[in-house]
Length: 210
Image (tube, rainbow, N blue to C red; front, top):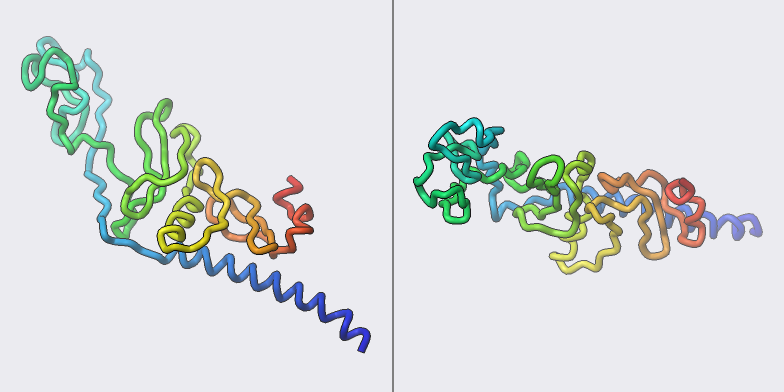
């Protein structure tokens, strides 16, 4: 009888840890499978040229929003449309927009980038292309996923209380805790990498010991 009593609390802890481990996996799967198609992502089929003013020749000017067969910037004869090299008066061609990053289901990819590799920025968006929490310099965003930011946003829209912890670029913080249990996750996906343990013992987690 004494052995049974000694083992019971330990079994309860193991069951609780497995429960939170499964719960974390279910949460990630639900966020991955959810699809919103009220606004379709359009890649715009745009391209950006590497033209410079010297390529335009005499009597032409380089205009940021002037396209050549859908590519921009382009050369335009001086005096046409706004003139004087002042782009503020030029009609902006929508075909010159940097193309959006789209997924195969027609929704917007979580990460959208604008600008060049040195001064450009990447930011997180919801499935309809609206900007949400999370951004960083484009030159540093090669592994940016915005997975945490998007999952958190979608849960909040549905009215849920959200305990997900995200980094400034929208990825998951390596340590996640909820209802007294803590575990380590893969920052780019949120997938648990260890079995959850009580918050009082979280210093034993590998993501805190690194």
